[in-house]
Length: 242
Image 1 (tube, one colour):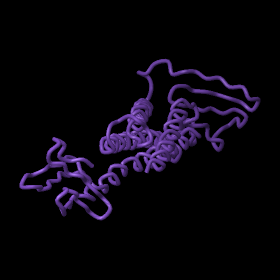
Image 2 (tube, one colour):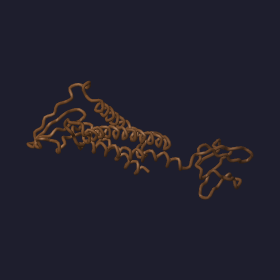
Image 3 (cartoon, helix red, strand yellow):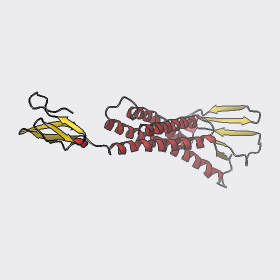
Image 4 (spheres, one colour):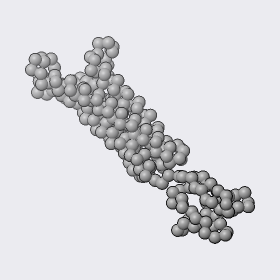
């Protein structure tokens, strides 16, 4: 189980890295070569800057000067991508605590719940990034295929594909983390055991389900169930020992 959680964490970690790279990238949309008059010069834009480059390898970027003049869909994509990065950070912290291969987080049941919570956070992070990239891509494609749109048309940039890939990895890794609590529920639960010996009732605390049926079978108080043994002492103050 811990190996599967490690794989899930690697998926989520790579996904968050891809989402960060997509958020910081300036290639969310690039100039359509079909509609470009000067093919040696192209323009590419991101969430934070507008850039222009040429065939000689030189390019110049200008940041968006104010958020009030930015179109609404760009602001929405900014918020979604930032939320995805922040959720991914907190999801990584909870995942490290909830993984079975770490020494923090308490019992296996508690760690399984923490790992499941981390998986939910990763899934929400992936959905946020997926929504942001899809919203931006929808705007580009709607303008590209709109015959009444006469301004410069753009095509999908590399950052969108990186963002989609990162979102998919986060969703897959988060789903694997969520299955941690399902598998943990299949393990035997601790129950209370009561054994009657010499007319008195002896209660044992957290006893695995494998030794619930422990029967006194001789005067020494040795109770046997297959290969599991428990010793019962009536006069030493220690009534039960496993």
